[in-house]
Image (tube, rainbow, N blue to C red; front, top):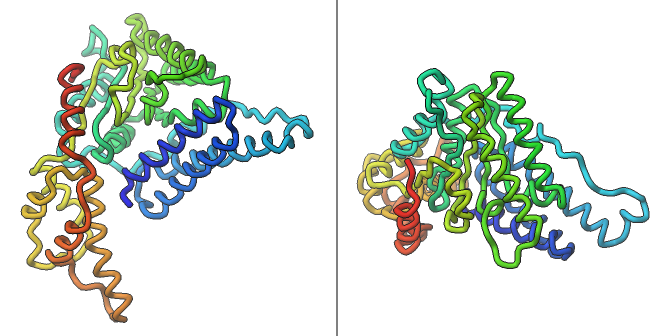
Length: 374
């Protein structure tokens, strides 16, 4: 399974868990928190190279902890022990202590997106004196799953000496149920304090549509969180403040966002599937560490993978290589696996379809035409 698919599946489980948690259906919430944790654990097992692996480990701990607490409520153990079950909002848990091993050079294509991010974040941090009119503080990355949104955020963390907060909506809304809007305020207060000390701060919010989207049947908690976030985003635009606090939001469903928030993201950047040239570069990147046979034609593979995401292409290379590893063990070879051939790739492509279809792309492109801001 691809990393993008598992990330999206875990996100869906987490959102369902939060909804059940908020409605008081604790048994359903426990079930979905556990599924979210199990899915992230599977992601780490299958894709240990993911740049945010320690973040996912933290999320797994939080989901399991919340599930355990709700199980105790369901069996009345908490009331018997007199424990409230609530935990202090530990902001340090969200800070990326170790920079991801990803740079802009590791991301094929997306030159327009990289340039927009440089102009909005990297240049102002390096030379704020060159921006008398200020600079964008909100950046929205949107597009199909597996096309590089999280990788871009990881690269930004590597390019600048900044404090990097990685926040997911489920953590904000579930672990501290009833305190979510206060936690948003604490998050931004901490970010401003660090920035005033001279440290640029980037708040990266994954699945931002789950936090700032508009849903039918929502309760007061979601509305209060959106209002608090709106207040904090407006505060970042105050021209009298020159400190560096940025919000980068990532979403696969930008149409769910409240339009009031869309306007707060001055940069709205579409992250599309890789084009032909980018697919060639991706195949070069992902095959650089494996032994290829002379008949492998990367240009032909790029032609055959129209509509495939960056994550899809990585998984194709991984699956083709795994065919040779499987043979190595089953046939008892002594030295090393044979080279990966063109036939290996073609067999994988025969069994693996693209994760993105034309209908989905048209929806993203229509939304981009309406709200584009590069």
